[in-house]
Length: 262
Image (tube, one colour):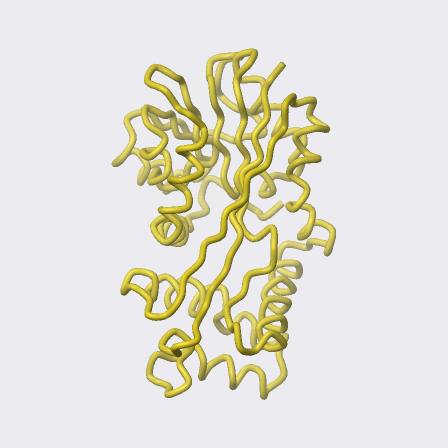
């Protein structure tokens, strides 16, 4: 759905998010009860940072650059498409798939392919951020809403998506149940940061969120006044810089939906 190809490379963003959300990601992983000897697949492993946290896991990614980076951290990395996994049936005890399933043209078919490589009784864990709107400018909900809507509009127009395509990722529970998964359970945590931020967290916001997701791509979708205000709030040299305000308070949801292959 989002145009991933073997040549596409956004590894820097994947690593930045994983490092930023490491405490919350590790907490969710810890709830899965991964035991020594279990075979785990990280489907859509990116640069392999989370794969390493999953223990003795196999990483799989479509992008060649991501797979090369992952091999520096993980011994077993496969290049392949989740829609057509180059893996045998019923070989894994757990499949972890984070922020990936809705990159596929047919997420339901992708889940069924993940189930194919699970042993009976094995579990699939779909993890997705932003099922709820994030809070960035706690003191200005209107401006925050406008910027988030502008960013979504940018992605819809870039990839030819409908509003339903964009919001469809919220229905992870229904997706697993439609695939015939048993014992579906959901667990959500909040990624929460307040001022003062660590240097690593501030770097994530500046480089990945402000300069990346909220860069000039959103300007055409904002009024001139809102764009000027966003620039001031996101500029480390400006007096209004958001990340150094004593009332800075960031919230972002991170959800994990787990089910069992029958």
